[in-house]
Figure 1 (tube, rainbow, N blue to C red):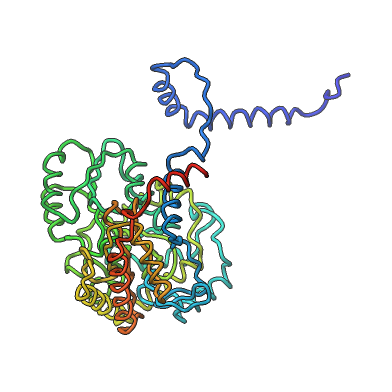
Figure 2: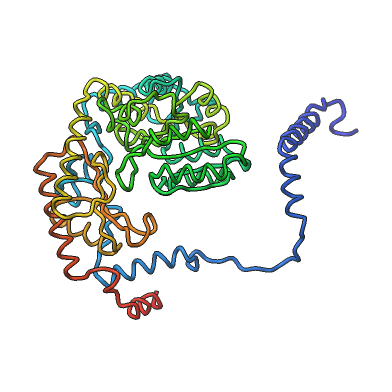
Length: 471
């Protein structure tokens, strides 16, 4: 007699149920997969044996080695990944030395504010550290909705959505809203995260000359009728140059050409406007005129993550369809609470934003009087000192560190070669003496390097190539 005789056939039914479920899951993606296969089979190449390239052979890695060899030849220490041994604000501690610090985003000095720390502590006690899941399924906490409501109220718009990363915010929002039939037009100096989002979306990309509304109009005039959706992206305060977007001129174009406008407020929230409400307060226009307000929570608000603010429909689309929201863990409750506490202080202490603007104006004035090239900076949260040569910028950073100032270089490929700079982030907590001392040291150290013709021109290419050959 069969050993299964008289036994229920439940196990066989479970197997069939599992197979049916797998078939349904596969069918959900079958249409897209058939299209992909059809495209790949239009021209079927003959099988080819190939060897996998090693990471050591990648041109990107060789570029790193080239930079290291040039630095080694000139005796330049790596200025990046300096480990801070305390919470960094107007001052910091590196290798046991207290330094004047111009390399951190703590614009309003809130990172160690007692209210922020208390709110963070209380939230950890209640919720622990992590949201532990996507907000869509099990990661939602009351503080998430509270923060989004605060951001929307702060901007005077309908709704907001928070993401776990500022970089991810641009990537997720742009790729969610745009597709291959659409067009994105952006300032030539837009942040890399926006470029990544455009690439992921598959939309056509066009750029216009930096902060040039006339050039933007030239682009729109030639292409506006060919696309389903058009998005224009600018920054409130540009992160590399410190100038302010010409939003009044762009809004006039928006009324004529009918595009969506996205403004990245990462370096203007808490900085621009009498109460630090950002670009719209700075220029005095209705915030509803901008379709997408985007920003980060890691600068003025002492937290981490990013946000999109605008209409209720925009927020609903983000929460339903943006992969960076749907498939990412929810913002850690403690970070959410810290951001809320930062908004508390920003709203009740507008003098912090005023102090920051005063410090930025002082830094810009003194730097220009000292003959330093501050580029396009308007003297708000970001003031660059253009050096030109990447190696010279790196050594200037190291010389300032030795003299007691922490300021980091921005070099190729982050900026074109010839436009390397030190970027100074101004905070409300910097003192006038710290600013004067830093500007004087920067001018002194840069002049010494320039007089020595220190930089790429002094690299012995033959010796550097020999060094690379031995690696």
